[in-house]
Image (cartoon, rainbow, N blue to C red):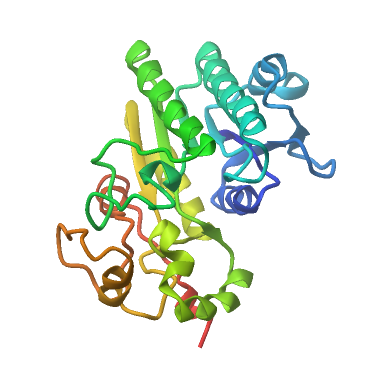
Length: 281
């Protein structure tokens, strides 16, 4: 598949680029930063003219069959609220609108776990959290992600042959990050903000590839997380300490993720292959 990948120089983007190419896809990376190289083009996503031109084919090359959109200010608090909104919302609109105009009918993009209610100062409605309750944005960054999901919902209504997959990625990690995980055990509050979740970037890339291969027309959001938590302390202890009044909808394993990946497993065939526990003894 010929794929346009925005945010290709980022922490997640570099891994997605590598894994998609290793799987045999023809991927062109787009980002604001990055050294000149074959298969990489600098692109300002907030400039619609640049975006539609890029997705239509750079240097008169053929256009793309799919777009993987990861380019954004990646988290709340990195920039001012106004800058976050004025960058991320237009960027996603430009990518979606250009793809629609050009006849690209497969989009996979990074939504965020923040729409679930992070940092959970207001407790979640139940555990494990899933895609079934309405978004609860608690930051401007998360508000943008919520609006992006609503925009995707309307675009697929207008274009019934369009497929848009939103991945509510958990905190993205690479193996070099895992040495610090044992330090979280001292205080359950340290990682309470996302229910002690994470996602290995290689598994995030697997989810992207699965969606490119099997996603049906329409809009679907998915939580994408590792199969386990960042903690050695058991879930029962963590929840008792931080969310004692939140009910469980089902039994969960001692260290099973509290960010439910059941839907991604069932619909996409996603299955995490990597855990921090394989790297830290």
